[in-house]
Image (cartoon, rainbow, N blue to C red; front, top):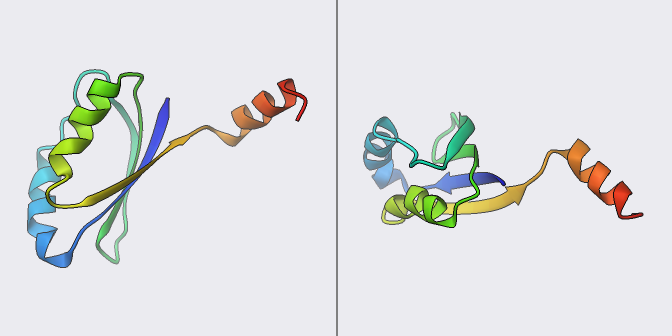
Length: 89
């Protein structure tokens, strides 16, 4: 499954966030597809893929002390349209 995460943090945690990003290594089972940074500060966006709940937790939990992560399960719109069409919607 594809996950889209938005991470936000308080300005006083910016240095800690930069250090975490320098060391970012996804666990086995997590594939990072793309990443973006809000150049105005305080937000980071990531698209990644995993089928493993344990890998998902290993990837996200280490950040919980310095930022907030909001994650959504996503699907490409063309795939979603195909799925809905096959269901008669």
